[in-house]
Length: 216
Image (cartoon, rainbow, N blue to C red; front, side):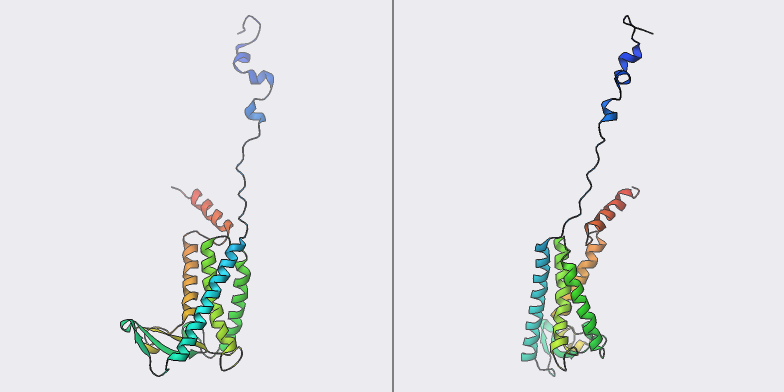
């Protein structure tokens, strides 16, 4: 069917067909901008190192006080017996585990400290600065004992003095401030990973992608 001018109705109703592709076909399709990975943040690296330094300083200070004021033969009962201050020297790992392998723990702890210092340069989230700082401080605090306490370099015994419920670690392994910082840092890392707050932006994007694809 034609109009008076000879044009078909289809030409009137679809001008794009006569004039060429419509704007929807020629205009570039909008694309979501690729998310740029977060750059490392030197301020968070500094925060992690400061947290680690504080943990080491507090650990060494409390160990100094323990050795200066506690008698290894007479535990001090505090907090109604919840905590006993029992001075001991540990040649093993955290919580008096693996005694007799001091030099091995020194090597392992040294490697862990170096690794964490390198890893701290890549921190982009504040919670990870806290977690890495605590683990680094805990590992470094006991490593100081390994290197500089008796009976000798790299064979030093770690000072432990906190015993819960009963003295001398009878109810729970005896520990120190460095052990506490280390355990708190590890617990925070596990919590962050389990809740989808991974160390890197890529891990978080992958987790978000998996959640988006999961059936409702």
